[in-house]
Structures are given as structure tokens and as C-alpha cells.
Amino acid sequence: MSFDLQQVYEHEADAVCAVLSRFDLRGADLEDAMHDTFVIAAGRVTTFDASRPVRPWLLGIAFRVGVGRLRTRRVHDSKLPDDRDPAQNPERTVELNQAASLLRRALTEISEEQGTVFTLFDLQGVPMAEIAQSMGVPLQTAYSRLRLAREAVMAAVKRYERSAYAP
Amino acid sequence: MRPEELPPPELKALLDQLPPPPTLGPMKGAVWARVASSVAAGPAAGVAAATGVATVKQALALVAAAVVCGAGGVIAGRTVFAREPRVIVHTEYVVSPAPPTAAPPTPTTLSTAVPEASAGPAARPAVTRRSTLSLAATGSSEERQLIDAARVALLKRDVAAAQRAIDSHRTAFPRGQLLEERLTLEVQVLMLQGKSAEAADAARRFLQRYPGSVFGPVVEAALEAAPE
Image (cartoon, rainbow over all chains, first blue to last red):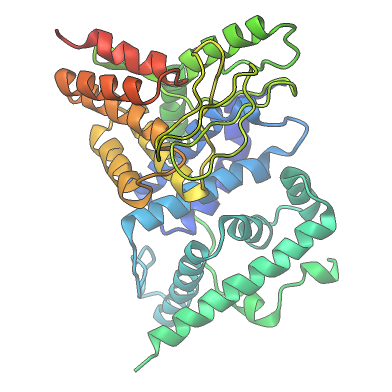
């Protein structure tokens, strides 16, 4: 089994960054989370089945790191930190932020397995065949998990939307 | 796109509103430098795969050496290495831990030693160190996250972060499957904090509670480094 961590980093760092950014990690926090993700991956390389695709496995680790950091920070946000120029398109900025905020909270509420499948497919566009192979399940099982994950995400989003507008 | 892949309209509407992810930019190189440095702090050889070992003795030696290398230890006040102990073993040697509380899973030991009856919540199979190896349980994902966070923090010499993760684990999982692993991390944190005497006390309690633990060598190292 061969696993070149630097090569994996070169290929996957952007995808890991994308996953972690969904958890409102920026700047030094994002850098720390990325570091942690790859260090954890390095530590688990001996249990990694090299016949399976790297990306789903690695992004699964990133997902857990992101969720862990968010839960630790206990972010109860009704607004995101503003990393965009609101003067350019304030309404669009608010809309984007609300969607990201709702999704972020939903991802911390659903199971890790569901969150991982959802993140890999719907957010990162990893082919379902790769996800299934990484999970070691038949393709149809992976699709079933995706369906359940989507239902869980939308249920969580609706819960937050209702609570946001509750009297 | 297959029908199963099409998101429901509501979900699609949400996904369409998401901002694009940020780009790494110059941070990419800086992060790699940190990762490389942290990983280099570990042993050159990873945890060995014991697959295919011919004898029990070879498996024990291989796994014990791997665990010593992989479990993490503090010697003379500096973290030597910290890497999650995971071992792929031959199918004849399926290893699982005996948690200190609740109904234990069915551990398969490397010997035919028969466990004693449980004497209480912290009871463990009565086996000698040579005869039984138990590796860190996987725990729930949440529990594993906290232990991972503490371990990574120790790697980075971030004692405060390690302590926070340990405290969180203690609160959330007072009798978690990864309790044994957490206790070893506590000893390492105490050493990094310069509290050698406290670390030694914690180490002695650990060794009394978990005789034959796979983390024994790590904890013993802390004991040896403590002043008399």
C-alpha cells in the first residue's frame, strides 16, 4: 500500500478547504482545521484501504473535523461573519449567508454518516460510485443513504427556519 | 444524472444559494509546512500491519512495538510522538478492547485466557500483559472527535487546547469507550504542563486500574520521567 501524503495534499487540499469552509471556518481557524484533517489522515493511513478512492475518505475526516470544531465553538448564529463586501449586493449577501447558515446548522444536527454522504455528493460533487466504494456499500445503498441524508438536512433546515421566525 | 441524484426542488433552491467556497491561495503552502512538521514529529514507520504473521509471539512483538510507536508518549517533558494506534491484524487475531463499564463486547484475545467475573463497573478480563492486547476502541464519532482533538493539540504542543478537549470528553463521556485513551492523554498533558509529580500519580493510578493496558508503555514513560 502506498500513500504519498504530500501528493494527496496537493490534489485534495482545495476540496478539504471547501468542506471545512461550510462550517464557517476562516483564516487561522480554517488553517488549523486543515492541518488537523491531514494530520489525522496521516495517523490513519495504515488503516486506509488504498484500493478505495482517497477523496471520500479524506473529506469524511474533514467533515468530522469541521463538525467537531463547530460544536466546540457552540456557534448559534443567526448571521454569518461578513467576509464579503455588503455594499456590492447587500440583499444577495444576506441571502447567501442565510442559506449557508441554515445548512451549516443542519450539518451539525444530522448523523455523521448522513452529513458525510450529503457533503460528498451534493456539496463536493464526488461521484456516487466513489462514495459507495469508499463506504464499502453497494451503489443502491449509497443512494438510499443520500436520500435519507437529504431528508434529514431539509428537516433540520425547516426546523431552524421555523424557530427563526417563531414569535 | 440519475433520477436518484437529482435533489428535491427545495434542496436545490438551498444549494443554489450557497456561496462558492474560498480558495486556499498562499495558505496552501503554509498549511502543508505545518502538516509536514507535525507528521515528521511522529515515528518514521507507521503502525505496522500484523497481517500474515506466522506466530503469536511475532504478532505480539510487532503489535507491541507498533503500539509503543503509535500510542504517543511523553518522555522527559516533551512529546515524542502522538499517533492514533490502529493496527490491522491477521484475521486470526481480531482485537477489541474490553470497556471498563457496561456490558463488554466480545473481545478476542490472543490467548485462551478466560475472563474473570466482573467485580464492578471497572472490571476487566484477568489476563497477563503478554497474553492479551487491547487496542483503543473506536468509540462514537463524537467521542473520537474529542480524543482526536486532544491528540492533535498535543502534537502541536497546544496544552490549553488539549486540556479543553480532555475536559469536554470528561464531561460528555465520563465512562466513554475511549476513557482509557483519555487518561493517557491526561498524563501527557500533565507532563507538558511541568506537573511531573501529578503526572506520576495519575500514571500510577492508571497502571493500577488498567494492568496490561496497551497504553502502559506510554504511561510508564511518564512515570520514569517524574522526579522521585
